[in-house]
Structures are given as C-alpha cells and as structure tokens.
Image (tube, rainbow, N blue to C red; front, side, top):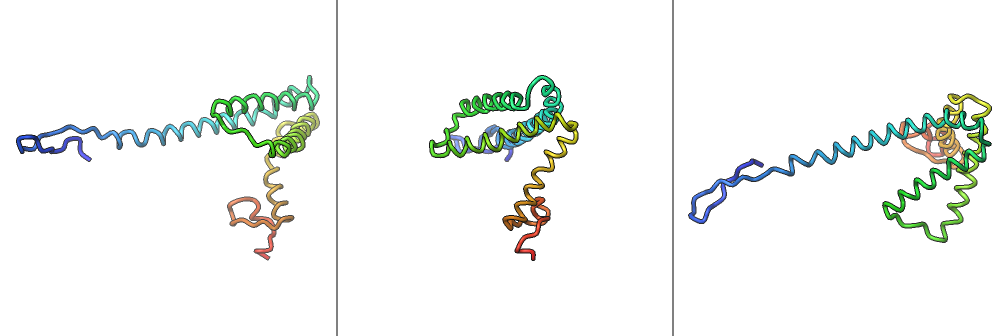
Length: 166
C-alpha cells in the first residue's frame, strides 16, 4: 500500500491524496512489547524463585518451618488476591471451595513446610535440585501408575513405560 493514491476529484481529474500506512507501521509493536514483557516476567520469576532457596535458609534461622510457610503463603495470597481484584476475575463457586482449601493446605502448605524443614538440613543447591527434579519424578510416576503416554521428546513422561509402547 503506497503512501499516495489517485482519487477522482469533482472535476473528473485524478487528485492526489495522502494516506497513512498505519497498519504496517504499528502491527509489529504489540508483538515486540508482548515478547519484551514475557522475557521480563520470565527473568523476574526465575531470579526470585532462584533466590528463594537462599532466602528460606536465611529466614529459617529465626523462624520455624511452619511460621515461614505461613508468612510466605500469606504474602503470596495477598499478592494474588490483588491481581484477582484488579483484573476482576470471577471467584470460585462455593462447591469448589472445599477442594481448593484441601489442595492449598494439604498439598501446597505441607510442601512449603517440608521445603522449609529440608532447608535446615541440606544446602540450598541440593534443595533446589530436588525441587527441580520433582516434576520429572511426578511425570514418571504418572506414566508408571496411570499408563499415561505422551509423544517422545515432549515431556519426561515419554520415558516411562506405558501400555501403548509395550
């Protein structure tokens, strides 16, 4: 699309009209901004998550594993609650609240307490390695116990035996 185009005038002669090519000029900007935001979010997440192990080790000198877990989860709950309020996300139904509470307390709460206690016994690097291996172990166990299969190379579950590959 050119910047100038011939447009018929009232006298029948073509007149020159300037058109702005805004579509071509502005289309890449949102994609570039989105990529930059995604990269920034990834860097902040990885940095904060990586420093959490050292922070837990330091805080565990003054706080019990339970108190540290409560503090961390309270801060996370307030932060996520603010995001939900700002974005006006719908709240879960009353029927789902018991399951959400069960998962929050029994899975995430106990996980944090166990992680905080483990940080007292092993160094931060070993704790980070064990936590990073967790998703791989879960995928392998899911493949072994539930017979889930996935495409080779798409996830660690592809390494586990399944009925489809037997």
